[in-house]
Image 1 (cartoon, helix red, strand yellow):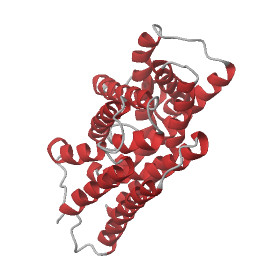
Image 2 (tube, rainbow, N blue to C red):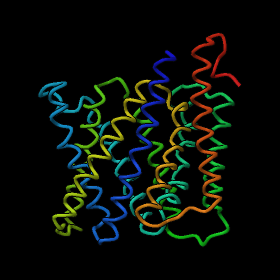
Image 3 (spheres, one colour):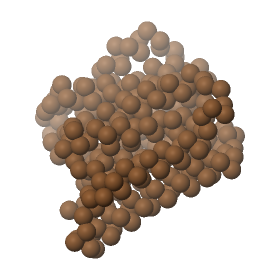
Image 4 (cartoon, helix red, strand yellow):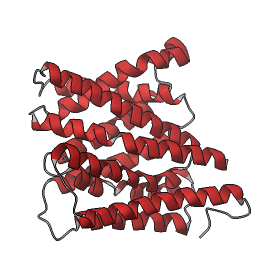
Length: 296
């Protein structure tokens, strides 16, 4: 239903406005010497603690046992990999540049969705994704800057998140979104608890606060994403991920002094235009049902 697709668009845009603050905290903690694996562990462990009461309230004691444990574990492994690669990339480049490269993931989602999810992808959606990717290229201007380790790390993060999003769509509707969020955090926390022991460094009281806050932002944002994917197709939502660049650019400048240049604003403008176009096309399809949004 088209009104559900509009709800999905709104939820996705809200998530994209919230999640950059997760990157701000992760970058600051990394500057203070907190190991990446420890930051990822906190994001998942505290996420499981925060979402457990809601999962129990919704589904009762059976919420403690995932209904598809293997699928949730595989899905959690991809969010672990995506988060780890992304946080590592923040050591080498700004939040905006990391996100710009990271946004290869909508292209991968759109490419895989017809084969994995059986979704139709019309020419308009392909064009929106490609133009949005052009916007990220304008921001980072490859060839004009030295290639740092952050570039391949960002690409790896984007690829892993694309697979995570595809798996999210595959299990959408199998459980309440909050229960699904809890399952992801629980499986991820179990995996990371075995890894973090080898790199653990005692955090300061302030760092503990930031680790908890980081998890709260991450779980809130990804809960909104799950709700979005319960209401709309993956290939429709994928281009809207570009709008995260707007808040990321602002946050990077405000907290770390990464002042964007004029070309960054040009690229961000293209991203905004793509998001508006996707939303407008869905609205037109809703009020004019004779038109098929899926067709070129």
